[in-house]
Length: 363
Image (cartoon, rainbow, N blue to C red; front, side, top):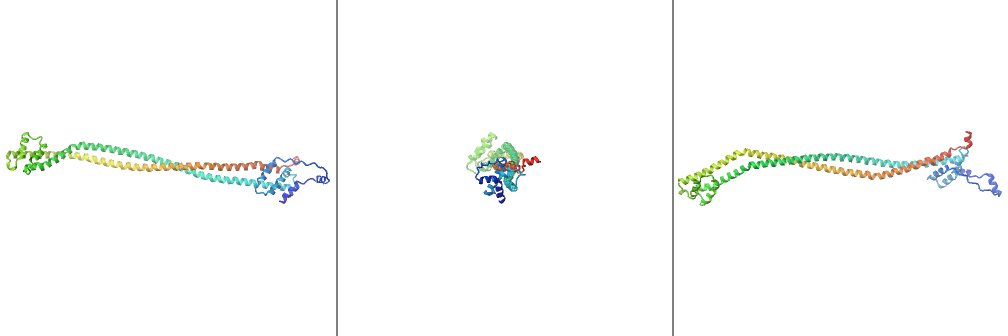
């Protein structure tokens, strides 16, 4: 502060002769203000940016700059040299503050870039996961299609086997029904007629008729009369008629039994084929159901991966404005620092090191 006070006093001291004329009351024309070097403006602007200076100190510096820097370095007296040095220190501090501001903004950018890198990594991971789940879903779709086709083929084959069984067993079913009916008629109506145990002979006789179509007409004509007679009333002819009717029923029953026995192996083969095909269909259906569950799980995983990918994209997109704002602020501070170096600091160095014409000529 004392150096600044001295610098101000020395730089602004009027010549003694002029002071003497003023003291004698002589009219002295006002001295013209020395023309300031344009480079001084850069120095003045730099000092005005120094926020750490007190207002009085700033005013003293600004007052001394034109003369101190307007004087060549080899012509400056000591106080002016001190003042130039102090201004230089102020500018260095301003430059350091500008550099610090750049560093602060760069640190912010670094943090944002780090988060951006994390977001990009998350996005890449989400894209990779989606690719994996999509491929898995595609494989499960193929498995499902294959299982569905296998089930449909097994079902078609089962229907074919069932139709063969139905066609092949049709005659057996009819023969079995007829055999069962004959057995019932023999045990009821025929037995009742032969033993004469029923008073309803007419009904029993009619029950025999459907099974006697291939019996001799004379026998059929005699049957009703023989049926109506009680055992005590029957003669040898009646006994012969009933005996032949009984033999006819026994022969028919035996023929049906033989036919059924002969047809049994083929029927068993058809039943086995149906059973085996049904088992194949059950297995194919179970595989299709398992494939359906696997496909649903794969589709759900793919959908989750899609959602995660969209979230990652949205997060990265939302981060971009913050990144642009941070880099813009950093670039502004960097430009301000660069401008200070190229203009303010360059102006200071130019005038600080400028030599007088005499020194240049002597060199």
